Length: 505
Image (cartoon, rainbow, N blue to C red; front, side):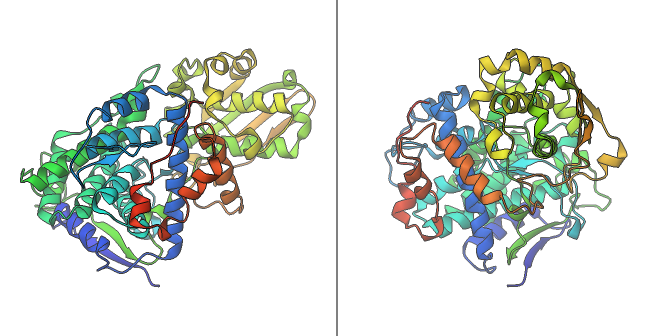
């Protein structure tokens, strides 16, 4: 099938255009994505479920608080509510969404996009994550969609979110990347519930005019619950805005061309009455944003994947590296911006919370080395970072702290910066007492990256699912079956999708 697109000109009302695109896409008027696209979005959704179940099972704070809050908002009207993970009780949809999105995102271990599409010259490089699937699932459960229709809604949400990330870099203005996800959430939720393009336009306008989160939520020496819950809170606002618009509330129109909204305010268009960008959205074929998104194979900030791959490569080639940790004299990691600024912040050399540790390059690499010395093994599967690697005991492990002191983290300059976000350009070097100087060479496409060709992805994703989800259910095989083969599931099975028991880990 050939690739086809809907192109929204910078000179048109793109908010209404996104609304009409969402309606037409779900109605099948624009063609269909290839089966490989449906398979890929199912993989990302399955991955998010493992993250969410384990976060709830381990009693993490934000998901626990938001789930408890959601269960206070029981919905008794047919078709007006949706359940939280591990329940069949329907609550108001915005509360189901904030709870479920928070659980999916809490570990910071699910999918990532880098906003990079050189084929269309759209390479602004905004981050984003597959945190918003609960919006599609909640709306699908409310409207009685089947599994294939639910997957199409997830593709739609990722398409809008991912393409916006390619054309507008929110991070350049200290605005959090979840704004793109909130816009996509409003459009997807509204299209499923039967909203008009004008109503979706109003909801997008409400989101952008009233709910802009700045990156202050990710700043500070020790990060808080706000970092992990940012997407959830924005998704909640999007669903609430869409429900208000459906009831008749009229929000700001044509928000992408509004001179006082973030887009034109930060990037004044050269043309009068224009937005700063053209937006191309997939209609059919295999060129959808989700196909360029990346998996995390464990709990770590996505920018550290190149260093992890470099370490795995060196451990695999030189097993004697694991003979004695005292022989590791130094580790040097060279990387690009913005990774150097985000996970190389000097404050993160002494992480005291999980939210800081999983954004600390030196902690991540030191912990992997500690695990390798303890087990005498190497490899992504064997050393996969899990929740226990960010426990209070792990955060203060003496060997981890010693290894942190031996790690030098430096910016590689333009040579590295120019290779991002095509890849994750990283070099890891070890100075060893017996083996001498060892180098990974330049790592560009680590395991989990969309352009990695190792062939290991499916087996590593299944292992990760069992590692994480196994913390929260008694029968992980049954849970795996529940969330695979979604395209063949009936509307009743989608309605019952979250109806399983989560146990404490």
